[in-house]
Image 1: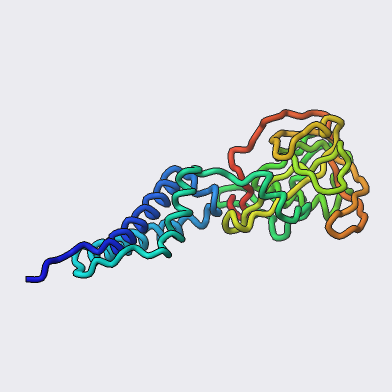
Image 2: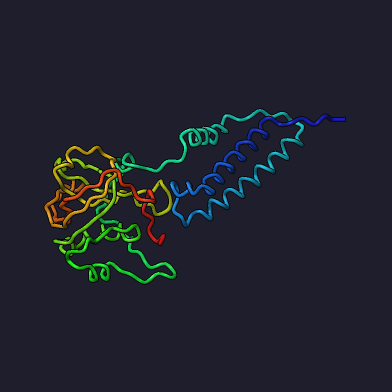
Length: 261
């Protein structure tokens, strides 16, 4: 009678697949998955968890019913190492470090938001038209990137308006010390495609800011000359002349998601 042996390689692979399944399930249950993907992508992560669980079960059955004691393969490390690092580091949002390695967009294409079911349809034009000159115009998450794009395209629409927005300090080469981009990260699909969307702001205290510091700034919109460090061209852009800063304020959502709301 042939004795059945457990295949170490198959058992190791089944354990890795199960570990990935549990990690993704943990992210879904805790909502930390939103640190990595757009909310609309959650359903695909659920399918991935189901697929990994099925593969783990099939591989475990193969390991228990095998007759050859195959050793684990070196290639398993490609799946085990990133999982180990992810668990050890814990879920965390991208920050200023991600913005440093990407092209800053003062205008983010395709970010205009439509109203979700049950909400009144709003557009940038209607928001601007309904806001009195002295009213503080706040950059809400569902219109933040679209408003930043509109400010870049038509800075004259924001001259003299009171503006308030939340973001982290981000500097680009050649920017005067008293100016920073108040920046958020825009995610279209997942964290890998994150784009920094910044609004230029100026106040004397900006010179002492460290990159990545979160804050809420409130001030008056104006047009100013700006040389794009990536193109070398001068242009007029909208800038917030800040008169009030609330340090340390962070949004409930780490990212902006086009089409989420």
